[in-house]
Length: 246
Image 1 (tube, rainbow, N blue to C red):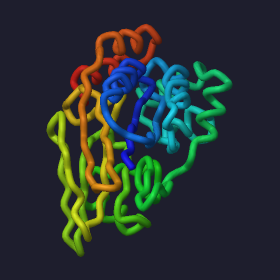
Image 2 (cartoon, rainbow, N blue to C red):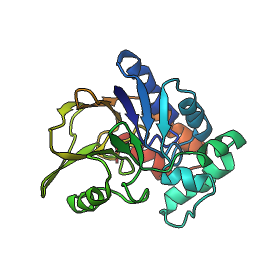
Image 3 (tube, helix red, strand yellow):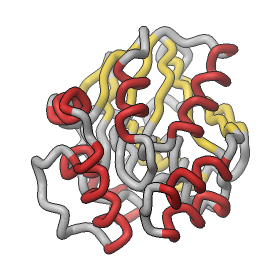
Image 4 (cartoon, helix red, strand yellow):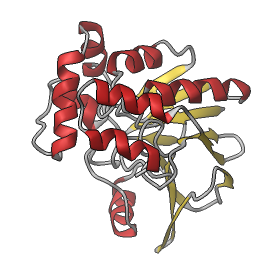
């Protein structure tokens, strides 16, 4: 089975549409979304509607922005720009979008012999940015392979016996074969707000038969996405960071 894996769309309709147009030329059977459909960007309703209408959609995991924007969590854990975006998003949500966000699956969720989550296998709000955080997450993971989001950085952590390594996917395309007997935490990167210094939208495809992960980057019209953020009255910083992937 081949899975298209998307994460951290963050209400960026321009980026999502670019990715969906690009993947029409790729082979996959099911779609997994690792959370944070909303927050930061100017198109929360449109992005949620696009995702929920995808024909091969298998599961959508709840992200921390999804939870709080839907009104089922506290926003005081966010920084000021993120909090402003959350409050704005709450006011924009249609009843249908709010219902969809409220009904999202809480991770981790098993899929075949691997799992998907938002932050970490035991806490959807926890960032996995370092080997120390990855080590803790490996201890709670119930499978040898877990795909996670939240950090907006495409990366791979591997654990073999007690040897742990982590590395960034520092290119626009990478095809990686998972090794037998090794455990993995894999982040596909962010569709809507990359933070690894590359402004292109990021996603991956996992082939469970051949045990390979392919990472892709897709350019999208950043300027219209920035203009929509500014027109909505959202913090300027949220528009500026899209151009630098920070």
